[in-house]
Length: 315
Image (cartoon, rainbow, N blue to C red; front, side, top):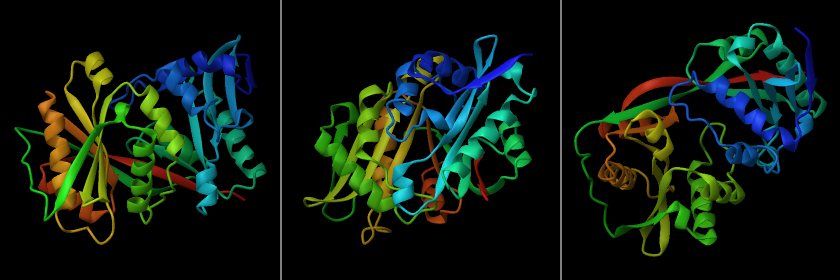
């Protein structure tokens, strides 16, 4: 098998999208990405450097894609690391392609004087996990994906003078998105491996995401003290004949925690998803966040699977 490796160009986006989707369809709850979504993550992402990524080609056909992404926001936050991506379509795995892509990605990070390589993987087993272990990565952290299935979700009242303000994400103004991101960053800043999200990323998501998202602000008077982002998974449900939704972000600022605001926010979001005809709700969380785990369990969520974050120190 004659193989070639080269850096991607913008004209390769459709082929890259095809490789990513064909490689990832085996994963739980997978939804094929659109070309527009992949383009937003690559050539329209200011952090993306095509010199840090490679295409694996066989007879001019792209059969693999991999590399490393260095995020400016993480570097500025003090994280000297980069994220690894390696995907190979199933029939070409086990032929050394994934190893070659990994070596190139790690060499790129080393040349950029990045101290740590990391990758997030669904589950705890499979070829992606084996590849990382082969190259000396270790499982550094875990996340839970939790699921709720049941009858009408119970609503919990808001404490005191706290009130909620709802906006469909696709209708949110740039100012509302900026405010949401500011509060999100503030509420998550002390959590494991967190680096500030950018307003730009949220605005891009607002423009191209195929789900129906709603953002919620919890307010004490005019002060925003908590946020929630949840959705109906429109495209996934259409393709899989399911009725699922997701809670993506839930955060309450310090000084307002453990007062029932998070529980009220979450139950309100669950009710909105349920009222749209959904019967299953997913969310994920840091496996070491025992307070969040207790909250979600109290509302009927159960652990569905465990995902893994791998890290490797680079010399």
